[in-house]
Length: 497
Length: 142
Image (cartoon, rainbow over all chains, first blue to last red; front, side, top):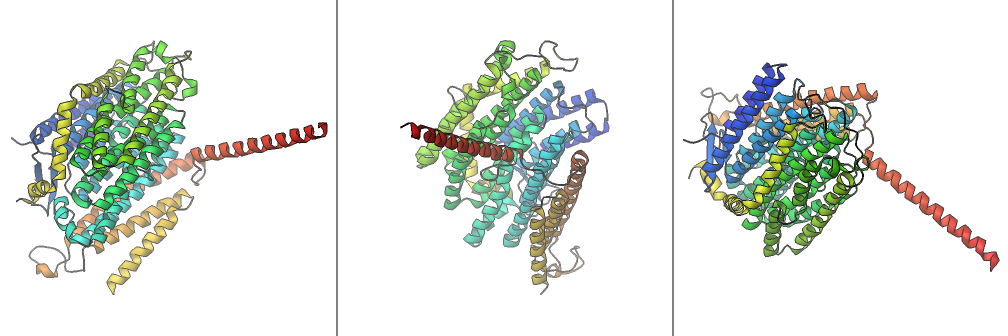
């Protein structure tokens, strides 16, 4: 029996509708949401099993044959991304239901969160450029609502920046799709992979660059990242966590997919390497200058995106495999760090470093939960970040990109520095410790609920599991990279031999 | 001829949209995005090639029919642009309720850096002045 890639899109959408119908029954809505995401996770794992040996799952929606109809394609990379994203969505939803600051009792939180889940799944499964645009829009519209859910002054202000930038990117996206259609007469990605090499190479590069800008805005690469550190920290902690883990990575996924399948060339390789170095360096320098936990972490998202682009820019199978591993590691670690940031805020009432202190005495468990992913982010052995960075550096040296490798190593040290800044500011020193006012259901000692701490701890454990299972996971990344590097497989699977 | 006219229209829409987007009033930015969206939709439509008969199976020869795909794409894009623009308008209204002003505010970070630079320049100036005065005060003693 084959599993349809439609399921991870349809399930959360159905849950969104049901959730909307349930109105104010918050408890029932939580059950619906958690059930739907658990089922999505199960289906994603099944898809992962089906594609594990490099096979592709293709579905033509409505029975129209590609390249005419709407095609959904799942290769190993898509399946990996689906599995990781649905795990994160589930863990963050659990955290959000336990967190008094998330407003999960708001009328629209659950339905919109489900729509976000559907949109992210659609981004990872679509085999059609225009549907990628639609999937992006579904994800973005959900994110607009989530980021401005409280309606406070700061949220409206930074939310407006976010919406305007995203809308501009979307308009550019439609423009690019229109131009591609005018040039080739198709929007099906497999069909485009056949047709694009036949058009004028200059035109092809121009189109590729336009798509790189569009996806670059979403992925927050240099110099298109400026909106991210402003808008992300204003939302509630779990929402920032899911945005940090998934939304930019959807952009990275689109860059990887379009570069491997459609627009890859020697020119774009050197361009991507330069962009990657600048993204890494500028992001981490921005992080060093900040004094708020969430803002530091937001700048680190930018810096980390640089590493992913670095692996892609090498255009070798080893580099691509390292990128796949890095993306997975990053999604888990970054989401965890933002959730811990939320725990800190919940515990101490603020995320500003100069008003924090001594948390390692008052909440040693939070300190441990922070320390592990923080060291992993910086790439300290034996954490998962070390494995990810090691594989990147090795493939970079093998491909002769010595400058970018040097930059990436320097950025690692600076990452460690800014993590120690949070550590010294929030966990060391004398405790400044009025326990904040918090909802009645939570532990009166700390203001934290078991769900929040529990879901964060599970993610930390997942990050540690990456180290234990590094070899099989890396092999999986290698297979995914091999499938992507050989685009004839993709084309054959979609268009038929 | 019609192709040139459409190309000019699309260019004007993109130009006007970009100009409006660069203004400081949120309402103009919203209008700018709407205009840009129209430009993009027209571009999608034009990507399908020349105009033709309605694309209904069995009514006309396939060669006389207009390409239906860009029309479907444009319709989808119109719906999405419409929805998102409505949301943006609501957001702009909320922003006006909160601030009683339509201007997009300065970037906080930008202000902070500018203030820090100004402070640094002032302290440098003061230090130079002090050193000069100290040097002058020491001169007669020698």
